[in-house]
Image 1 (spheres, helix red, strand yellow):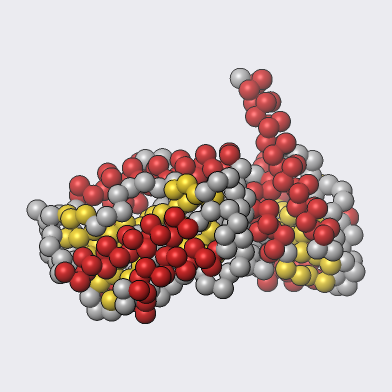
Image 2 (cartoon, rainbow, N blue to C red):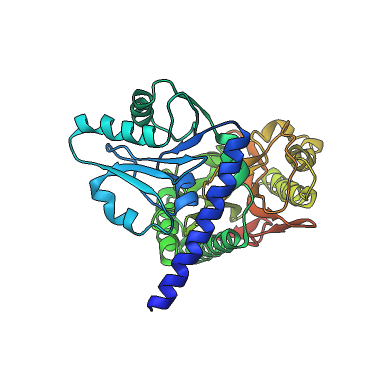
Length: 384
């Protein structure tokens, strides 16, 4: 209905305008005159615009003062017409020799000449950077990563609702997948079935990452790629997967025993479960990210397996699978309400097997809440 559409558009405009206003304050504090973004999560967060990275350059310019600008190909005009806030589009055609003039127009309008301009270092491509440098040769392009992180790190209720849904989709997908495990199934086949179930249960068309399904010795590799190895009795089975819902993702890991596994593998599974519990229990407002890492790591180290816990305890999660805060040793960042991250300790015995248990959590006003709730204890799957 038209009234509902108008209300929705107004709501979106309010959200994006508020986010842009907060970012402008952060840019001003960092003495940056503008921010330039490529297509990606930050652009979606600030505008709701989804673009593919392709051979045609696209940039969004947010000046500290004035309307945002977009430099983009004419074929994307329909998307700009649906914008929920004021912005100045600058379109170019298919002839690459004309593109520099359009970038120069944007640079002049945004007053980039001689300015300190923020960029997202992990996103801005060489293609767009070269066009911007030519359009504003006196500008200085600097990292605005801290300003963006400070904004995106704290999730509001709308964002958390999307993350809860992404968790629900992922957990339902795994529950639907486990019954297909049978004698002779390969890691690759199991990963394919899990991917199918993610879509069937409502995941966005672009999942956050290809599921990790690793068995036996392969499970000792934290970032293993599914292979044609067939599940066998005595294996540990590690499944690391996630869903995406309206651009927000989940990232979960559970470990299973295939029939009876040897005593030491059962032992490390119990240790990782205890480590995961200790990490989640330590998380709360005012504690450092490194303190959560230490709490989880201490359980494993005190049992003599410290050298086999070979990665950080967790990473931030939201519109990206890896974003601040990073739950690692030496990170003195204080946790605060609205921060979302994983707690995922692991023990990996080379040539034998590994265990990882990963949960998605959010810092609340008085503690921490786990968004994930699948059983963490090592469960046994009997091959038929």
